[in-house]
Length: 107
Image (cartoon, rainbow, N blue to C red; front, side, top):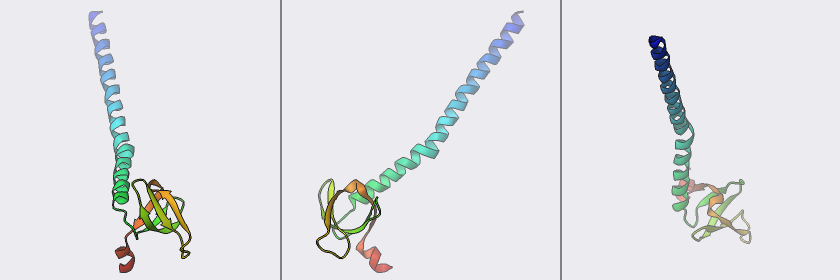
């Protein structure tokens, strides 16, 4: 009877260790597949916005193309199209892509 109790408690401990190991593996997998790429993309976006300068061509998150006319800490004024009167202030966070003028000339 004592041997049966000892073997059942050791298999219960093994099952608990196995479950904890699976939870650790799942959290590690979630980190490498979801959290790490998101942080990497956020760093890339912050670096792109910090390098933003007047005269850069941009694409907004809504798909509009424009040229940066003026910059402040959180906002930019963007000129859309050939019409010089179409200048719209917008948040920097609404910018999806930036093309530097030297990138446009080389293509």
